[in-house]
Length: 488
Image 1 (cartoon, rainbow, N blue to C red):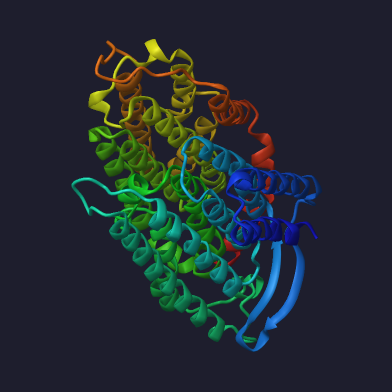
Image 2 (cartoon, one colour):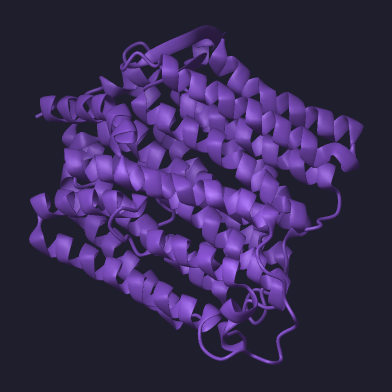
């Protein structure tokens, strides 16, 4: 069973690292596990029949509505592929960080990957919730053990970690309450998604239940005004932890909206749609303005990610083919982009000893290859035509335009603002006169190319040929829209 293997390989590799603690071979074992899961995910894609697939259904605690039911559709497969394909680069990126206890760090990364796989393949709401919360545990310890203080703000890594934990825990409790309520209302008390999606709740119930469901995923994404944990967490977290957080973990919020909010409370979605879209767009604009004002490169990336996520949420709630397909496509593009940007932040910090934009300048004179890699990543970040981000943002723009011209205008303004602050960041780091106070730095080496070049190639290839991803999504997106339309 490919799905079970996908779930177990990183889990067993993580268990081996925890028990044996082979620090010298930890990264090799983690990389081997991640390459195996990437191959398994690609095999799932090759074998995908084009419709929803349930591959295993076992009774676990049937009296509580809990069954171990796993499967996937086009959307689930996209996120399984994303998780499997991005993790080798995340693990490989840690080679230069020199973190202590590498066996423990890589074990926590692999436990996180296993939990993420569980989220994206779960076909039962309670099973989804278990994996959803389990993914928080290893990341909590990554932040706690390897996080750094945030100068002038909360201070210690422990304080940042606890705020992240409390925010996500409270959101999870809201989700648990909503799931329990839906299961009680379901005639057979089933927690399977098929049963919950067929549930017809009264309109007034859906209006308040919407927020119980949406809150958990709004915190996880996050979108304004549930975002305050994110910038400090990005700044405090170790490089690999931030990559997991921004590249994959936040996508659980998007996926959760698709699995819970849109199909279970469609009348609530209809009632609150404009509110949520404007909340997401205002948050995206706000984050873009704050990003432009940042003087720390890592915090600029954090607010840039927050701005992109606001657009993803707005596109999803456009509730049309363009909006949903664009949002999901852009989720893939965002994962590639944020991992590249964070790796570049780490590479620049190792060479200069700082992430302060005011202390940089002229780095291209010392590191022309690194400047070229940064430039190619920046092209994807500003959504230049023929890049992956351009496809996703163009689709989302069309989806929002079909709903409301002013929404589309706000989205375009956010995109333009994003181009401005990314160009500003590149200018401050790479262009201009050299800062003589910076230490002598080396250029991009083979390891930097191994991490960045494949990801840049993916963004360019999928910018020119987006059909493989869009075709994968088409069936599940159309099924979702037809189900939603049928409820009215």
